[in-house]
Image (cartoon, rainbow, N blue to C red):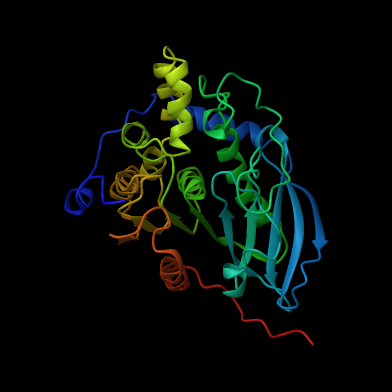
Length: 337
């Protein structure tokens, strides 16, 4: 697919206005306040992964409305900590999968929490283990359109709240340096990491690649690929629902979260990405931190001939090098035995 969005030179200075609801901050403050009324951890149980150099635990924590959310917590074997921690969010349609799947961050010396996606996990990967008990509001069958007509019912209100609570969960685990926690994600995971950066004021770092839910109105005009295509498909049937949907989506806009974020930020984007158009990532990057009164450290890596995969393993190497400078992983482990 050839480049279809703005030319790179325009992307690098692209700073669109966003239509923020006047109660954006109140909406999220009240949502998170309600979720924080209960202790975050439910259970932490050792999990067998078949790996000798990694220890893993099956974690359940309380997310939106106190609902149980599953996660894998892993750390280098033989290290008691405290370690810097990476909270990772999975892509659209994925669950947390199996405990041996995602080893990059733990092999780099970090404690690693991989959050499950409530009500997802059936499209890619190896499944999930977290249901969404609030998914009955009007909207399409896919997560991107569930509860689309009201921000209080929308799937991403719940998922973003879970993502914020995941940071609280990792900070409550033994062997974690609570002052050195980073949020990481690609695609949907990138949108969750960006939301966390805007909602958790003392986050230490955020790494975002090909983020979903950034520049949403423009993305709906540019692409019919899922997940945006699920929203378009719903509105093609419910022709009078457009304004209600736009109002709901405005509370989930990644550019709005980016404006409120202060943590050092690392972005990646493929300029031929037809799933999450690059103008959304640049809009978030260019307006990142503008409401905080500080000038946060930030950088972006663009891949002119790549799509939604972005820089793939090359981007991961950039992330490892950058995070090693910003957030030291902690003491190195020795192989057990």
